[in-house]
Length: 171
Ligand code: HEM
Ligand code: HEM
Image (cartoon, rainbow, N blue to C red; front, side, top):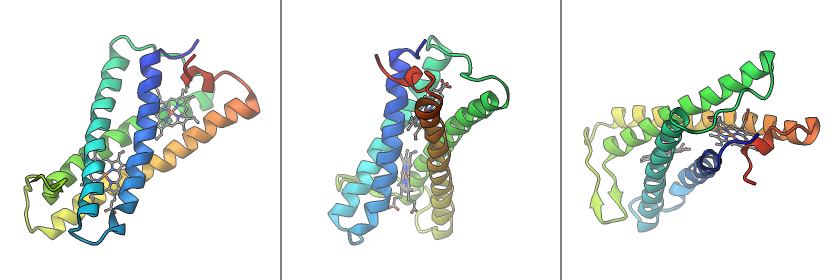
């Protein structure tokens, strides 16, 4: 038994976008302040971030209404650990995305040089730093937890040779 196609697509789109968003955030500073390159990379990060917000909402709605839910692949403590990891990932994604939107709102950046996004606290550097950290901490935690989660999936596939990874693969 595998997850349904939509669940599988939403899962891999989420995983791919998290990696791309994290990588984009790392290269923003490669360009000098106020240069178009910096604005374009940051704006792409914001745009793809909003796409991920829509994907996460779609995933949560689909999970509650119609998406296939499978019983834990294992019983006992390992099954509980897997469930907690999945809920931690949903929780951290929600925090990171909400703080990402707040980050856009507090900074008032230019969007691809077309227009400036509204800032609710212009000039308040302390607030800007606080919200920046509230965004950065969960994004880094996601990478750690998702890394453990992916390692567990690969362990199942290559060492235990059971069908857990195939549950989340198309076809
Ligand atoms: C899980 C998805 C996301 C990841 C992994 C991610 C990752 C990051 C990281 C690592 C930073 C750098 C933090 C720093 O050095 O201060 C950052 C900055 C930022 N993020 Fe995200 N982010 C995500 C989603 C979003 C979303 C949804 C938005 C808004 C719609 C957003 C808007 C921003 C903004 C405006 C910055 C500041 C850019 C700058 O310093 O020039 N992010 N993000
Ligand atoms: C940022 C990256 C990732 C995130 C945020 C993420 C998130 C999640 C979440 C929330 C679930 C639970 C699905 C549900 O029951 O609603 C899940 C399941 C799953 N993920 Fe990921 N994932 C990521 C990367 C990966 C990678 C890289 C792999 C494989 C190498 C993977 C393999 C799986 C598998 C096999 C399941 C199903 C587990 C089961 O049926 O017990 N994930 N993932």
